[in-house]
Structures are given as structure tokens and as C-alpha cells.
Image (spheres, one colour):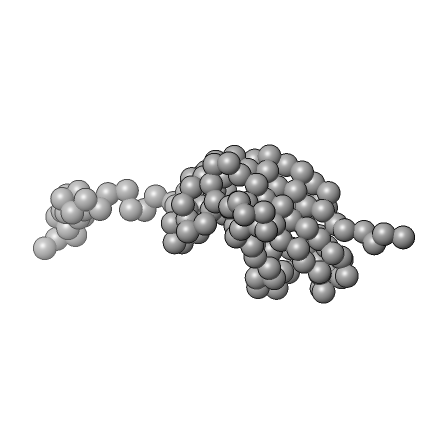
Length: 149
């Protein structure tokens, strides 16, 4: 087969195989990267958990916040929702679960977590629904307890 015949035959074969446009440079797509919202101790906020938050992997979604604590801090995290059964998880700087609460002591499905911080650093507060069921509005309050003099 002559060089001229081969050159004219290759583009036809690529079209037949659907391989045209393969030499186009790849375009990088910009995606949202995981970035929890930073909050301060003493924060009281109202937010909404929805299906645009972080998938939990077993159904449902979670919303994360970062907060910095010092070694020796005594904290209370209060999570309230009329829309879903809440779970609050406190994740330590090394990524391990430091504390978690499903139902608080008041007999409701709201969450209340008390913790004494042993290692200072940036922690993650994870808001999620029990058993991956539910979403909606919630209130989150973080309080650093102070000794009474």
C-alpha cells in the first residue's frame, strides 16, 4: 500500500471507530474541594443540612465545621433540630473520633456532648442525622466552660 493511500485511509478509519478528537488537550475541571467552615468557641449558629453536603457513605449527609481548642479546655456542644434526629461527632486533629453523642439527657433526639480536650489543635465538628435519615434546619452551639472562682 502506498504512503498516499495509507494517509487518506487513516482519517476515515478513525471516524468509523469514533476516535476523532482524541488529540485534544485535556481540560481541567474545577471542583469544590472539601473545606469545612471555621467557627469559634462561643458560636451559636443556625444552618441547614441537605443533600448537597458531604455523603456519609451509608446514606445521608453530614456538615463539618472546624474549631480550635487548647489542651485542658472543657467544652459543651449542643446540637438541636426539629427536622431530624441529630448526631454530633467531635473529630480530633489526628482524624480519630474523640467524642460522639446521639441523644442528649433531656429525652429528645437532640445531641449534647461534653468533652475535656487533652490535646490542643484544630478539631472537626460533624453534624449528621441518625442512621443517615433526614435533613433540614439545625442549631449548633459550642461553649467553652470556665471555672467558677
